[in-house]
Length: 160
Image (cartoon, rainbow, N blue to C red):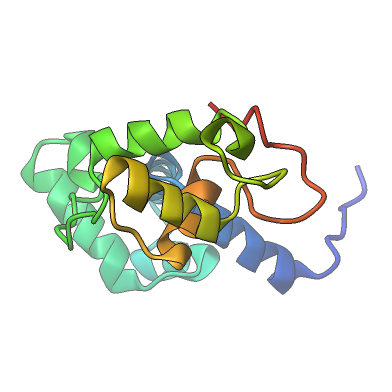
Protein backbone atom coordinates (compact mmCIF):
# COMPACT_ATOMS: atom_id res chain seq x y z
CA UNK A 1 0.00 0.00 0.00
CA UNK A 2 1.23 3.46 -0.85
CA UNK A 3 2.36 5.55 2.11
CA UNK A 4 -0.13 8.32 2.81
CA UNK A 5 1.11 11.86 3.18
CA UNK A 6 -0.26 14.12 5.87
CA UNK A 7 -0.29 17.76 4.89
CA UNK A 8 0.43 20.43 7.51
CA UNK A 9 1.99 17.88 9.85
CA UNK A 10 3.13 20.34 12.51
CA UNK A 11 -0.21 22.13 12.63
CA UNK A 12 -2.12 18.86 12.93
CA UNK A 13 0.29 17.57 15.59
CA UNK A 14 -0.15 20.78 17.57
CA UNK A 15 -3.95 20.54 17.36
CA UNK A 16 -3.94 16.92 18.50
CA UNK A 17 -1.69 17.72 21.46
CA UNK A 18 -3.95 20.66 22.38
CA UNK A 19 -6.94 18.31 22.22
CA UNK A 20 -5.28 15.96 24.71
CA UNK A 21 -5.17 18.88 27.16
CA UNK A 22 -8.93 19.47 27.04
CA UNK A 23 -9.89 16.93 29.70
CA UNK A 24 -8.32 14.91 32.48
CA UNK A 25 -9.30 11.61 30.83
CA UNK A 26 -7.56 12.59 27.61
CA UNK A 27 -4.43 13.66 29.51
CA UNK A 28 -4.38 10.28 31.24
CA UNK A 29 -4.83 8.47 27.90
CA UNK A 30 -1.97 10.49 26.43
CA UNK A 31 0.35 9.57 29.32
CA UNK A 32 -0.63 5.91 29.17
CA UNK A 33 -0.02 5.87 25.43
CA UNK A 34 3.51 7.22 25.94
CA UNK A 35 4.25 4.49 28.47
CA UNK A 36 2.63 1.84 26.29
CA UNK A 37 4.92 2.81 23.41
CA UNK A 38 7.95 2.20 25.64
CA UNK A 39 6.54 -1.14 26.77
CA UNK A 40 5.75 -2.29 23.22
CA UNK A 41 9.06 -1.32 21.63
CA UNK A 42 12.16 -1.84 23.74
CA UNK A 43 14.23 0.03 21.15
CA UNK A 44 12.44 3.30 21.91
CA UNK A 45 13.84 5.61 24.57
CA UNK A 46 12.21 8.40 26.56
CA UNK A 47 13.85 10.81 24.12
CA UNK A 48 12.22 9.11 21.13
CA UNK A 49 8.75 9.03 22.66
CA UNK A 50 9.07 12.59 23.93
CA UNK A 51 10.00 13.83 20.49
CA UNK A 52 7.06 12.00 18.93
CA UNK A 53 4.60 13.38 21.48
CA UNK A 54 5.93 16.91 21.83
CA UNK A 55 6.96 16.70 25.46
CA UNK A 56 10.25 16.43 27.33
CA UNK A 57 12.11 13.20 28.12
CA UNK A 58 12.18 14.22 31.78
CA UNK A 59 8.40 14.35 31.88
CA UNK A 60 8.10 10.84 30.46
CA UNK A 61 10.80 9.60 32.84
CA UNK A 62 8.85 11.15 35.74
CA UNK A 63 5.68 9.33 34.65
CA UNK A 64 7.55 6.02 34.41
CA UNK A 65 9.21 6.55 37.78
CA UNK A 66 5.84 7.25 39.43
CA UNK A 67 4.35 4.26 37.63
CA UNK A 68 7.17 1.97 38.85
CA UNK A 69 6.98 3.16 42.47
CA UNK A 70 3.29 2.29 42.67
CA UNK A 71 3.62 -1.05 40.84
CA UNK A 72 1.68 0.18 37.83
CA UNK A 73 -1.11 2.07 39.58
CA UNK A 74 -2.67 4.08 36.75
CA UNK A 75 -4.18 6.66 39.09
CA UNK A 76 -0.70 8.05 39.81
CA UNK A 77 -0.69 9.49 36.27
CA UNK A 78 -3.84 11.53 36.86
CA UNK A 79 -3.47 15.23 37.59
CA UNK A 80 -3.73 16.10 41.25
CA UNK A 81 -6.49 18.44 42.34
CA UNK A 82 -5.16 21.94 42.28
CA UNK A 83 -6.02 24.22 45.12
CA UNK A 84 -7.02 27.69 44.21
CA UNK A 85 -9.29 30.50 45.04
CA UNK A 86 -12.73 29.34 46.05
CA UNK A 87 -15.44 30.36 43.64
CA UNK A 88 -17.22 33.52 44.68
CA UNK A 89 -20.58 32.00 43.83
CA UNK A 90 -21.31 28.81 45.74
CA UNK A 91 -23.67 26.00 44.69
CA UNK A 92 -26.99 27.32 46.05
CA UNK A 93 -26.73 30.79 44.42
CA UNK A 94 -25.83 29.05 41.15
CA UNK A 95 -29.03 27.02 41.43
CA UNK A 96 -30.99 30.24 41.99
CA UNK A 97 -29.34 31.88 38.98
CA UNK A 98 -30.03 28.81 36.84
CA UNK A 99 -33.71 28.88 37.84
CA UNK A 100 -33.92 32.61 37.10
CA UNK A 101 -32.37 32.17 33.65
CA UNK A 102 -34.91 29.47 32.76
CA UNK A 103 -37.65 32.10 32.90
CA UNK A 104 -38.11 35.18 30.82
CA UNK A 105 -36.92 38.51 32.28
CA UNK A 106 -40.53 39.68 31.94
CA UNK A 107 -41.56 37.14 34.61
CA UNK A 108 -39.54 39.22 37.06
CA UNK A 109 -40.90 42.57 35.89
CA UNK A 110 -37.89 43.41 33.72
CA UNK A 111 -38.73 45.03 30.41
CA UNK A 112 -36.39 42.99 28.20
CA UNK A 113 -36.66 40.17 25.69
CA UNK A 114 -33.55 38.35 26.87
CA UNK A 115 -31.27 38.21 29.88
CA UNK A 116 -28.23 40.43 29.98
CA UNK A 117 -25.54 40.77 32.61
CA UNK A 118 -26.86 44.11 33.86
CA UNK A 119 -30.46 42.97 34.27
CA UNK A 120 -29.42 39.72 35.95
CA UNK A 121 -27.05 41.55 38.32
CA UNK A 122 -29.77 44.02 39.32
CA UNK A 123 -32.38 41.31 39.87
CA UNK A 124 -30.05 39.15 41.96
CA UNK A 125 -29.11 42.10 44.15
CA UNK A 126 -32.67 43.39 44.64
CA UNK A 127 -34.61 40.16 44.98
CA UNK A 128 -32.12 37.54 46.25
CA UNK A 129 -29.47 39.72 47.96
CA UNK A 130 -26.74 38.18 45.80
CA UNK A 131 -24.26 40.92 44.91
CA UNK A 132 -22.50 40.13 41.63
CA UNK A 133 -20.90 42.46 39.12
CA UNK A 134 -22.18 42.58 35.55
CA UNK A 135 -19.14 40.77 34.14
CA UNK A 136 -19.47 37.94 36.66
CA UNK A 137 -23.13 37.54 35.71
CA UNK A 138 -22.10 37.35 32.06
CA UNK A 139 -19.56 34.62 32.87
CA UNK A 140 -22.11 32.65 34.86
CA UNK A 141 -24.65 33.00 32.06
CA UNK A 142 -22.09 31.66 29.61
CA UNK A 143 -21.15 28.73 31.86
CA UNK A 144 -24.83 27.82 32.23
CA UNK A 145 -25.29 27.88 28.47
CA UNK A 146 -27.07 31.22 28.39
CA UNK A 147 -24.70 33.09 26.10
CA UNK A 148 -25.24 36.82 25.93
CA UNK A 149 -24.89 37.21 22.18
CA UNK A 150 -27.69 38.82 20.22
CA UNK A 151 -29.57 36.54 17.88
CA UNK A 152 -29.24 33.41 20.02
CA UNK A 153 -32.52 31.95 21.16
CA UNK A 154 -31.96 30.86 24.73
CA UNK A 155 -34.33 33.02 26.74
CA UNK A 156 -36.54 30.25 28.08
CA UNK A 157 -34.34 27.22 27.63
CA UNK A 158 -30.64 27.58 28.48
CA UNK A 159 -28.58 24.39 28.58
CA UNK A 160 -29.61 22.27 31.53
